[in-house]
Image (cartoon, rainbow, N blue to C red; front, side, top):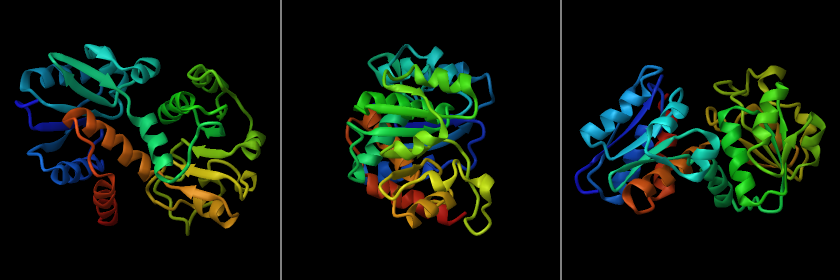
Length: 277
């Protein structure tokens, strides 16, 4: 798109988002004259933001809470994952149409692939059933996982999430031990220093983990959560949550620019931003 050089994030709040640092680094590495800004958009005003995107010629949009469902209803059409999830985190132009995508789940799978983990043929335990968990469950099903157990405190939310993949079902804590991959898709542990962590700061009892597990925490602040530390002590392979954040941003830029940015440059920028806080 030749007429646009601005991409933006909408959400509330947006003050502590890493997206500006990540995307600006990606644009710079790609050698394009694009800018990226964050707009705090009040709840209920997502449709207005989409209208502003049309009027102002904003070339790409990132969407975070609480606007993902409202944006899904406001764009011209949806890509398959966004349609299944009723949730959009990316808006891009195709001709005169605004297309809504959800790159979170695909970003999760890409982050695992980058670490040499192929989810095809694996059994996965997902802890949580909120928005992040739903994106992961949908993507795992599309990527060929053979079993997805959803472990969540609220039964009805787990049942709803299980409808996103034919191989998904509501699980119980003991299912974690039988999985190949265990994913914390909750916010438990966010902002908690491992030095001060208590039992309430673990998404599950670490004794359920095994040395042959791949343990993934979607929390990325701190990068090494107490739960990941416990898993590593047991011999498990651990993957932090920053990879998913980077890879979903890579997929966003690929949609906007038509070229794939360098994920390593974007991660360096994200880690530098985290380190300054």
